[in-house]
Image (cartoon, rainbow, N blue to C red):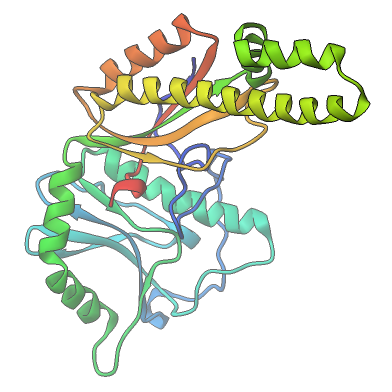
Length: 296
């Protein structure tokens, strides 16, 4: 099993939620780039990293995107993790700078999660702006008041749980070859093809290709169903993501999902994934923990 279980950037290897960063390089630059050199007193927006539940110790002295000082705005029994920022989104033509910003965002989330904070993450470039006569802090606390019950429900769902990525890979050609050798309908069509003239041969080959594809797809669907059945007992929730190509040489991704897993069930999920890989002609990639983007 291809396995990586240390905290890091939310990869697009698993599910990258809408609007959330999907950077593959997990290395944080040692020097953070600054976009405009503005000081905190010149800034009137609030860049939002996360909402955290009170009850844990929030890490101190954090710097985030653009090297800015991260601070806390409390509201009842939760807090917003923010830094002062300009109202315009972070943008640069230099992809290295953009990557550094995104990774810095994720590093703040890592520290919160690593400190045991129950964390609702927000995507890169979420900026709270002033409205009419209200400054950004007042807008933020007003929003927290309005969404308070919603956030409480989300905290309840993710408390004591983390997000993990599960990807399963199979050799589709090998599955196809096995079906070709064992499927009675395919073997009958192959027999007819050997004795047919050119006109009929074309039609038989069309039927043969269709039948082989249908049977192969059905077999893969059965494999996915069985895998899902085995892992869902250890997951509080599962998000099925899009399949990606070119992840593992000579193999096709057949399942790409994000799993919300309790700390208690994490080793059990790992064990069943090891069993899935050991018992069949499959490869499994198990990654995380990630910020729970997929489930909030």
